[in-house]
Image (cartoon, rainbow, N blue to C red; front, side, top):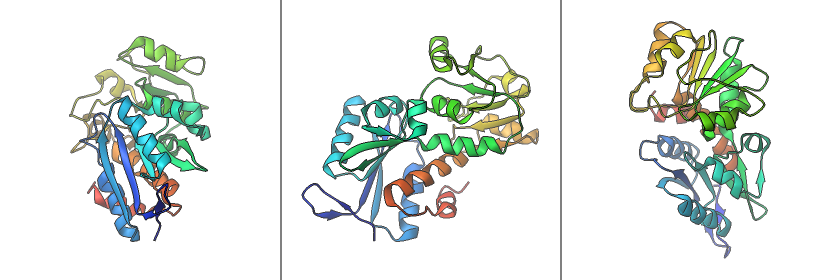
Length: 263
């Protein structure tokens, strides 16, 4: 059995938390609890709605051995990266961390979103990429799209301009990019909101990071057009599997994790 250890040396199970706001909708607890159960690991995974002070408290719990790992979701991925002593290459490139653990007494950060998006993007048609959003998830998408012509569009133009920097082109929100693979890195779709109609109509594929109780309107529309799609659950399970291995040192039971969400 894999176990953590408190600062006083006493053994505990593997305790992991999800840090963000909001978190009530998240399927991560269901996925990770299923993984612990499948492998017989004494582990727990809880969602915490936190502000920046709550994130700092969790970092202290990691250092003290109360927690063995953490996931970070919006809006704290960039702040989490700044608070880490060390970052993996993807987290450093994105300036955002979604996975935290202790290595040699210090908080290390990873961005497992990047690998999950990169893998799905590799299976999509060649061509440009249109990233929707300008937060930590969009930063991960931008890193994953390296090597492709990339456009960034967000409802906050200044944030889109800052994210695009010198590596991408800034686009206008709602303006289509013909033949692009659209990566939705906004919450749109979580509550059944649609993506800009012209953007979806012009797309050659969609990677939708948002997910809700059922398919997002963007995913449903692309499936009706028989175009390549990766939905939010695809990305969630892929990044969760990588995080699980970071915390436990063992290969994640991906099939059981996927089955746990029934999608």
